[in-house]
Length: 632
Ligand code: DQQ
Image (tube, rainbow, N blue to C red; front, top):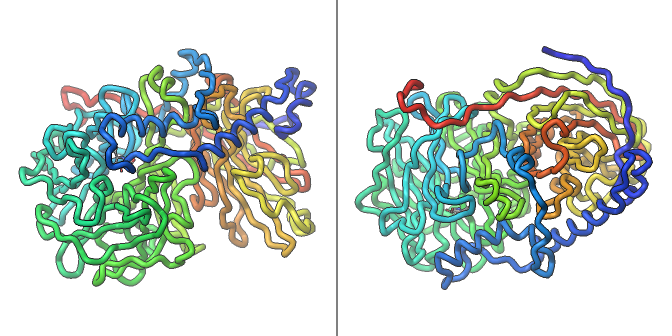
């Protein structure tokens, strides 16, 4: 059902600095709270970006206990102020915490999850494995959780696929990848952590290939199949990729490491997946980029929107190299050319090499992994989306982490310089009632409520057209604007304008996702796409970073965004997926029926015409696999 709704104008979205005046409009004073939040956000930013940070695998004498603690630090850091003191814990109610659980993103039924592992399609089922702690909502005791789906959206949870039970993985069954051989065999290579914390690579395979659920996994008796080679730190050797076949008939994989602080990818060749030979050359290396975790290496077609099998190469193919940078916990990628004779990859633009240029997602998104879906001829990316609340709150909730909605990946033919990511089409099966808001005129400083009922499970598409004359005649506008460091959604000449998600009626909590145009004196305009979490919650023990960066907008293109709102996660896609930002937000008032949707134009110098379509989303299934096997 499409419903057309006329909306009355509302009050402007005030800047943080103007918040004290808000009592007139909002009939309640939140005196300086936002300024305080801004200051604390800046302090947090300062700390997160510049403060001392324990890396998970950095110290050679780190024992398993301190390794776990170091991981906990990662999820704790946003609850510490600059002096290392914990900020006051918010009195979360059960209602607030249970609201945070998502309705259509992948989550295990309880406890801790991190990286996606070995995604694959087999006998009509999508299989998804993940780093999982079966005992608690914090990282540790890492096993491989397992679930299956017919459509990547509705999931059946299966028994744990692999647990630490051999000397070569007794301290953890860490991340790995699947390779489907031409004869249908499934190869699973994964990192095992030994009792003395050495990282080794192991082989596992399904006990019964004709089982569509792949319930039982056999660990190769000759494990490990790779150990850290000379010159590589014993804790700097992990996360084998999917294998690809070279012209010499040998399979190759790459494994992340570092030497000194230079991130790099080792290449191994194999004929049988039990014996591996290290190549003399590295696939690639980037000075100063630190440990490379969860490398992903895959081809993209320059001409077709079909995905490519991992072994594809030749004319019309480029290769994406992605590394998860341990030192920032961010995924970076670059597009380049792979030479299968030398096993070397060269970035198209050395200035935008891995870690220097493009992020896969500007928000909370890590350890991503793609797979080729032979069922629908597409390449799909999965990624771990962690929490940014406190660890003690996670324990109260009984769970931590989500997976981003699986996204298709294609090469962006229009720019030629980036990939495009878009939610898999299957997510649209959850769309129910829709609301259309056509050509809303938004003068400078306007906020319009979009009356769609509760706004916690949504799929939203929106386009924005700005007054071209005003854009042209503006000589200079916030030339140095930066989403993260320029005050977020504060007023500028040509921005921000966009959507407020998870906002309560008086706008005491709100998460703006917006465009912001800056213009230099040379007349060149730059479009930024940002998500500002600084006012997302009145609680102080949650992360409130402001994410985003500039996005190419080509001649003739409208500014467009798509947002997936699912309780405590917002995934925001700009310009067809050229720029993506994943946010975690933990409102206290903008929840359940209190969560509203607004469209806004907070620019001072330009009018904007916005068209918005929003669908309510029904919940996906996330249940144990039925004992009677009804779904086979
Ligand atoms: N997570 C795994 C490692 C990987 C890291 C351990 C990335 O294999 O390097 O849980 O998040």
